Amino acid sequence: MYASTPPRSCMQHKLAKGFRGRAKNCIRIARERVEKALQYSYRDRRNKKRDMRSLWIQRINAGTRQHGHALSSFSPATAVYSPVTTDRPILIFVAIFSFHTRVNYGNFMHGLMKENIQLNRKVLSEISMHEPYSFKALVDVSHSAFPGNKAAAAPKKEGLAILL
Image (cartoon, one colour):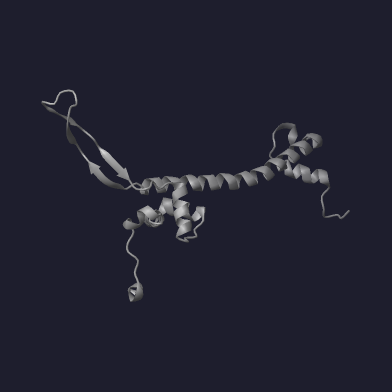
């Protein structure tokens, strides 16, 4: 054994520094606590990645729902004759909202994939928080990737118009 390497018990005492009670003093309890702490750290390094991905997805979903609603038509009220009495019309308020395809996280990511925009979730969540106008442009590009929404997109340029 080399003189510079500490014995195993010294290493476990160093790892047990900061523990409470006898877990930092008694070697047997310290060994168990250190072993359990290393198991927790191994598990939570993987859980941290999972939690961060979930957080990014929540932020992207919130941004797409914020920028993804577009009203296409609104009809305020119509006068309809009552089927019971035909002598006077009854005013019925009918509000008709028709939405384009709702843009949520799944539709947004699918549209980005169809448009070959390769941004990862971490970057997309940062853009959604700090650059709302840029993220709105991404939502519009993703929204126009679906076949029913092509009319909302700008016409594609052809020939020399591409350079302008």
